[in-house]
Image (tube, rainbow, N blue to C red; front, side, top):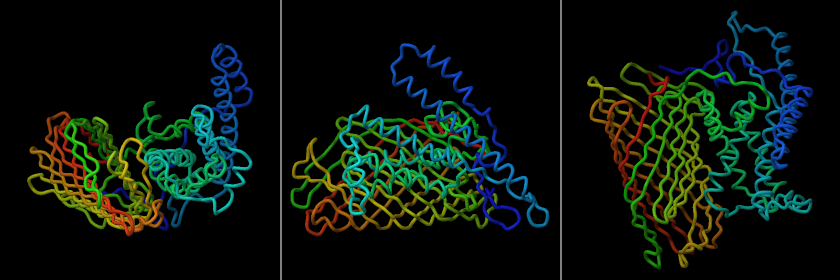
Length: 522
């Protein structure tokens, strides 16, 4: 069944995100008088004896709540007056889509709060030298020539920064802004932090990953937060929850768009090695390992049609550990727009433009791909109930990152140098789902980028990375399953004036898991 999201009248797409459809439940506006009573009751009486920082935090939250409620109330009233003055029917008397209420002051407030919290953590808790800003450091950063490509810790740059960007995005989405509009808040939040809240030169790669990666993460987390009405969802999107706390506006949850969820935990064996062009093998690992992984599919992969970004997305996240080893992946793709040209009871497919954010890190291989791909997703069911599912993506790797290792001193204190570039990527997966015999799957991710910015002299060239996973799962009943998988990772660096580097990892796993079909699949 298609998940169409077309307006009546002129046929344009309408954002069907739950918080923008239907009336919004509003709590009473928190006035200054009420805030004063709360302050007197809680801060002066119940928080007596607690550290000053706790009292200051609660006081700041009250102030923000008063400001947010005031502006939200004024904007909502203004929007209501405008809506009443306009004709609410489209051409031919058809009812038009309800206008989306946008609250710019609370959305900007979330940018300030997010940056303020991170700056406070760095300055007060961590006492990081780069947080000791001054007017001089700000002046030096406000020059275009100050921007650079940095070499900070890979997971911080390409998972931590996008997560921080997701807080900007969720704050804007929770206040009525669409995906592309919220991108402006993502870029604003990242740029202001880079320019004003760090003494180090502003980082171009941080700006890109925080803005684009933050938009991908933020949109997915925001939609998942709206799907499940549970206090535990504050973990998924804390700034959605914070918005409800500060503005008093509760999100309208629904419709239910979750397609499926699965998760597993298991153990296996890990083998990895790294080779240099001149030195031969310079690092190796062979250890038992443990793994956890989860996957969420939102919206029907084979029937989504519309022009609203992320009406369908897939998110896979997992990690493993062993003796002196770690690995982690965060792989996503979401339709920016899609079509479902035809469909039947036995055959359905969709195609469209997809935005991907793929992050891999381990002790052996670090790799990032931010891609813009054309995707095709196809499902066919045979007469016996066996299903074939094929998903293919190919397109532009807009921004890629990888580490070049100074392997002459490969140990715990080794320095890693960063390559950044642009290139191509392709992803392919094929699954055979047998009604009783289980599921057999193959996934192939391939990436390659030409190095545009390099931090090692002479490392101009290409970085390639391939991930191949074969898996089998067997159903046990009550949504539980057992399975086995094997993943091979191959990374190749081909450089002009420095030695080439080749890295290989093989991870075999036996696992047990749980799968659930959501309302969009039933």
